[in-house]
Image 1 (tube, helix red, strand yellow):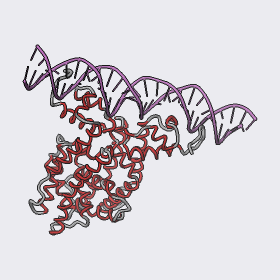
Image 2: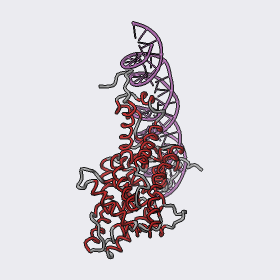
Image 3: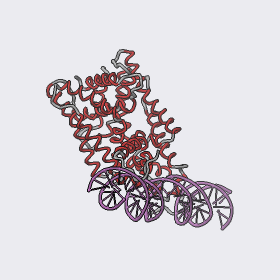
Image 4: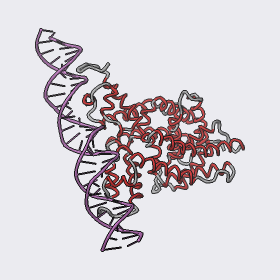
Amino acid sequence: MARTTGSHSGITGPKIRTAALELFAKQGFAAVSMRQIASEVGVQAGALYNYTPDKQSLLFDLMQSHMTELLGALPDEDAAQPLEMLEQFVRFHIAFHHERPEAVFIAYMELRNLTPENFALIEDLRGQYENRLQNILIAGQTSGAWNVKDAKIATFAVIAMLTGVNTWFRSEGRLSLSEVQDQYWQMVRSAVGG
Amino acid sequence: MARTTGSHSGITGPKIRTAALELFAKQGFAAVSMRQIASEVGVQAGALYNYTPDKQSLLFDLMQSHMTELLGALPDEDAAQPLEMLEQFVRFHIAFHHERPEAVFIAYMELRNLTPENFALIEDLRGQYENRLQNILIAGQTSGAWNVKDAKIATFAVIAMLTGVNTWFRSEGRLSLSEVQDQYWQMVRSAVGG
DNA sequence: ATGTTATATGAACAAACGTTCAGAACCAAG
DNA sequence: CTTGGTTCTGAACGTTTGTTCATATAACAT
């Protein structure tokens, strides 16, 4: 049943974010209209503007939330030996990204639809995340746990490799998530020469 | 000087493809208008329809050309030992993708803007490319040149890792292309246990 | 019950969209 | 100089876009 005019709800805000997340991921930011999002929520387009100042902010909020959650969920940095920290990072990255395919997709694909200011903010958050891995790689290099020529390159290589899991892995497939984690961990470990 | 009405040219077609490639890569297919492409070429929007039946075909043609060139440029399969073939693939992938950043970007990001039929065609070409790497990995596994648990996973991992180079590498930076190729080859070789 | 506040509608806006087409402008061939 | 075939312009089409706003409704506090 369509929502009647004037009804309170308190759940419209989250519903808008969910609908926007799914639609942006499936069709792309530019290809999704405000009316499409509204229709998914069961509301008229004008009502969206009680929750977001404009379409751009809706995109930015989704991306910022994702990056903030990602950084917040990251395991503690100096809890263990480099090799354990690297393994932790690999398993965490795969699992966390697997749980939110839409947000991950948007965070990678819709950067060009952000205003320059918003783009800079998101890029900063992404840089913080990459730095966490880079610091681990440097720590292991210093301690002799492994041997990488260039920590910066290794960081990019590992993150690209891990994020790629989302393009093919489905939990209904022939492999379980932990099998995938095992194999990627083995490849990463070998790649850094550990 | 703006092109005057009625002038022949024979170069408008290629110019349209170039303009579309650059604009699609920079702003995304859905965010680029036919008028924008036309203006880049120096022509009115209607003139584009002498060269493409519609916007969708323009995108598809660009993607198909890219994938076909990619497959055509791939080094011969059974020319050498597995280890040499793998190294050849790694260096080729990095170099080829580095030369066409826009086409690569579009081929990865605009799949969802293809019609189902066009999507299937492009996915088939991509599958052929991935198979070439997978066959190499299987060959090396069989010959004992290296040791990978799952050739399919390793294929995805290697391609994701290599394609990631395009997101950060710039030839004006501190590293040369061949240094990057060297380091990625070392990581790939280690990752497969070779 | 009454008044206030939050939340929705639904119509409206100008601008931009992809695409079509009649006619103008130009080139090459005879 | 004429004819025929391309290539382009410029206007038009029906739709859709993001966003605004007066108005209506429902819930909550008193």
